[in-house]
Length: 506
Ligand code: HEM
Image: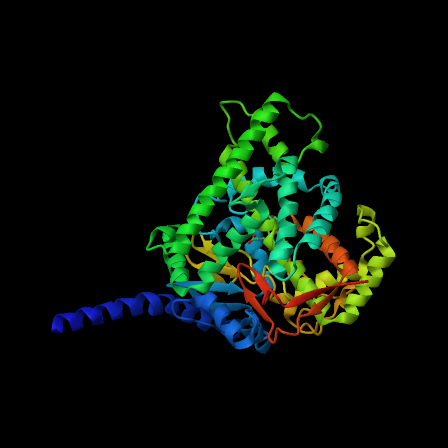
């Protein structure tokens, strides 16, 4: 009996050391050093993610606990929290965020999918020379010409899906649109009839990416497994749903690979000479075919990972940002009417062309305000410090977690007047809008060398979706929904999914 008691005591002691003392002591030392510039928000085991979850419960808004603490302590620039047993340094001050974004090679991104062989070789998770090569190469898919060439396809996809979809599930409705746009942009004609799991590919992929994100947040056991075991989580006591996710991931990999191999054969036989006629897959495959046997930088796996990367980076982000825009249009009918008037003046009953986009001045200001107020990318992808390093006045240790709160600065009065008020008009007269701007205060698409490569495409899509939907439908709050939440799936999103109604305009 005594031995059992002693063993339990030992276990409790070890757990207390690893889960509490080990992360807490360095945090306390930092708090002593930084004083008012840091806020301690230690949260045993669940750490930063737990803070967000509690904030949803208390405030119906994942970010409110942290934002309120920063408003209360305007001198604070750092939040000291934990990532299970590791200290987690949450950067709110724009000077710290700037340094880490510029010196990005010092920090490694944590794979948000926690699944191996899915997107590691794509642009988001690549590093060093591979990242440089891909960034330069991917730029070819986002030139002005390539973007404007997609406008007609965007019009068609939006009209078509808006007509067919029941629009009762906001995030699914918008992800179908943004997913199909990414798939068409990447695969072009080859995407016609592309099916996964017996469904249109963009539907199956959206469901899969959101299930992977959601499963970690809906089940604390899985979240804990993900935090501790990372990619190995799927092998450790997997439940039925986890096994199903692994099966679907394998299926996606196989099907995407088949499509790529098919295109390789087609272009080997009949190469396309004119770059303007190439969708992104063609650019990649043409480059792949140019390689000599000696120097093989690109392989089929990289092309496949790039597709998943673009789908992940371009679908949910744009859909979630657009959903938030539509929510604010329903919340503020006067703004909706102003935007409707602008849309009618600019395009009338016509389809949207590139010449129209710059004329959506009110809509542009409105989107900027939504991205300031509720950016879906509330933080960057979490990072880990690669080696001991000095970040301004903080000594960061190898292995510590780092969170860059890219949205926090644009919600503080010290940076923007009346920052907690939703007012799109502030963007119509931009002079002195951001105080002491160092270029890293309002950064909805991040900043520095690893900023969002798809930001112009995203803005274009959002404008076209909003314009076409507002012209056709009056967007209303669903009276049956009593409480709106800004929760988190992968991204910060408006919930529940049935919060809006689309009433056809006569
Ligand atoms: C409203 C929509 C979008 C938002 C808010 C957004 C936001 C961001 C942010 C914050 C980052 C930096 C992530 C980090 O370093 O942790 C990023 C990177 C990236 N985004 Fe976007 N994004 C959007 C749409 C898109 C679209 C449409 C695409 C492409 C189809 C795209 C492709 C990428 C890629 C490939 C990266 C990685 C860039 C690199 O590491 O060099 N994004 N995005």
